[in-house]
Length: 153
Image (cartoon, rainbow, N blue to C red):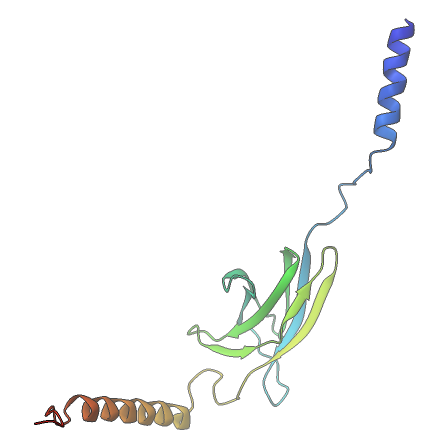
């Protein structure tokens, strides 16, 4: 009987010194925010992508409400960037780096780069991209069709 009591007391002392964790303790955090245009109008119905700064991978998605607000729960602690995309999947806005801490919520606002880009690409942007591509192509053609003769010939 004494041995049983000694074992019970020993177990009690061991478990008394062990930190207790409750089911309510959280090991994840969240990001809340709002998506808006440069004019301050809400971007409702847009996809929110959360991208890990460490890996570059999209780790979670959500959708903005009609008021442009969003909540992305259950994120592991770390650094993230939030991207807002339109219906075609084009990124129209990107946040600064948000740091998620366990049991806390990081809050941010994502503003679309241009109101012209929301729902479609700007004609000026498309023109610039086409011109840059044409200039790069012309440079490659000139470099590869130059005189192949050696200076010693």
